[in-house]
Image 1 (tube, rainbow, N blue to C red):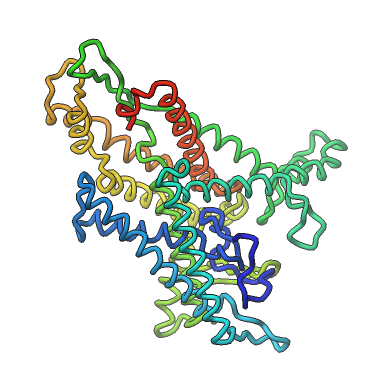
Image 2: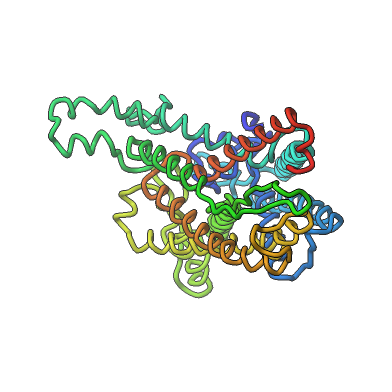
Amino acid sequence: MAETPIYGVPHTGGVNDPFGPLRVIFASQRGTLVELGIGPIVTAGLILQVLSGSKMINVDFSNPGDRALFTGASKVLSVFMTLFEGLAFLLGGAYNVTNSAGVQTPPSLQNEFFILVQLIFAGIVIILLDEMLQKKWGFGSGISLFIAAGVCLQIVWSSLGPISPVSDGKYLGGIIAFFQSLGPVIASPASFTAWQGALYRGGNLPDMLGFITTIVVFLIIIYLNGLRVEVPVSYARYRGFRGRFPIKFFYVSNIPVIFAAALFGNIFFIGQLIFNRYNPGCSNTGINFWLSLIPGCYQSQPQTGQLIPIKGLAYYTFAPRSLGVVLGDPIRAGVYMLIFVLACVFFAVTWVEVGGMDSKTVSKQLIDSGMQIEGFRRSGSTIRQILDRYIPAVTVIGGITIGVIAAGADFLGAFGTGTGILLTVGIIQQYYEILVKERITEIYPGTKGLLG
């Protein structure tokens, strides 16, 4: 579907992309059937999580009926979000055609209807593919698989892609561009300017600084994923059976960064739509003052035609993706990192409550499975007090660390974005754990009940 263009949509090369660089996270492709990607699914989950976390809807995740109802509501809301985002694309002029006089005209009413039908159909297919994997016809989650594939594609293409996106003769791939720029370095090995030109190209083109940052971020995340606190537990029914209950440093995995990226992506997307339709001149008078302040003002890049925020809320929630941009406006970079970190912490704390990962729920699960903590009596309140020492702390500290790593990697131009790398490492590790679990249950069938 990512290679199949939408019927009725003209060529989108050089045309503003409403999602821009955020597409690598949404696993989408401009002008194709996966125009919206997993954005509607993630947004629907974000809305339901906030509603559940704020107790506006009551969901008992220990009740299978409530879990099934919550899952069904998420799928239905995903379809409605696909419809909403598809209409927003059409109303916002994402598929407008520029005629010879330079005037943009929307598609015909018939074409708009066919475009919307195709987007909804493709969104339902993505939802069904995700459900097919979750129903044990495959491993893991379809959403995770789509994200990891998109990020890996972006990293490989940014490293080795031989095609230039602009007409200046420079290669796209950072590694190829590095070898292309080695001439001045060989001529003057001690020249700082020569090394700077070889390692850093500036702008939005991948370079060796971004490649090195990508490798370093991968290693840091892999190391931090291995950090954990292990609480010794024993099986009450069988003496001598001991184990450890691990509490990871990234306790909520990559959930906070997914929702934070979805929130910022929707601010960027909706801000463009409001700007194009109601405030194209970025006026600061009357009602347009508030439109410029809250959704933000945008400016078109001359080479790509991409709209980039230059003012307002969108400006401070759109990551500066190169070192030059960060040094040019360090206040913006600091505000963006602060907002992103706070969003990650908020979603981490909320997900612990919503996902049944809090101390109260985990202690009940341990008691129900016949476990107890060594050296303490078998009581839910006792286990909860011990877990309270670790779970709240690792939730907040892990959320802060995830936000800082993701934002810092974006500042240095990491391939696939810092958020994408975080998600990919976590997803690959989850697949590894799933495959190991499957292998163990094949060799020792009796462990299926223990491992779930």
